[in-house]
Image (cartoon, rainbow, N blue to C red; front, side, top):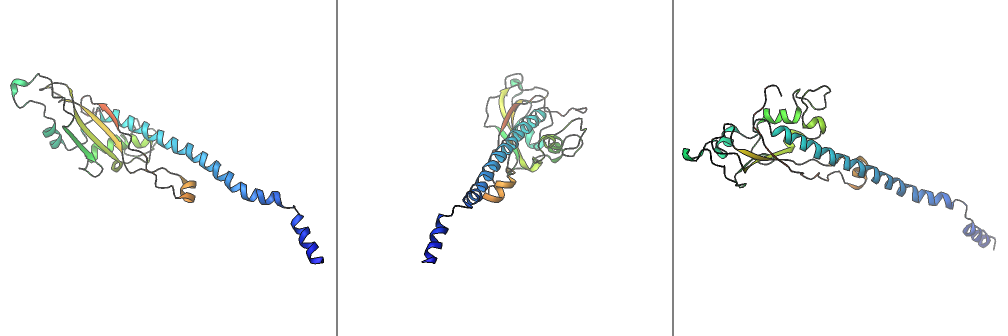
Length: 210
């Protein structure tokens, strides 16, 4: 009988319930806070990637072609096959394109390094007068970029600086940095979208003082 009373008393004893509830809910609340914080951090990485690509595209639009120059000349000749056509508009045929980077042909290393690392050849160094892409987002390296040049229909045959092209710059194989959720939920391999940035080139020639 004494044992039965003790058992009933134990069942009716509600001391420690608040502590038990806290032990259950606190990890869930902390995980939610971590999710909110890392979502904001991921959006910051996303925005930083887009801004770096936009900046890099503007820089590449006024720089030497990042593809092999011989291939570039073959794909986008300055003069028409028939010299009598010089002065006419170049064809508007976006299927005429040339790419480098990614799994395709490698880009010109020196030209791409200038676009990515800036004039000082280093990422994130203070005081670079002509910064590069990785000065805005250190995670973007030359091997993460794909560059594509396409016919735009702008310009004319015989133009001294060649045809006016459109250039597309996109990023590959960069994942979000999620230190908490990545470790807990295995979300450390989520790839940032390519975010292609297309821009009309100007004179594809690197300025010696730029």
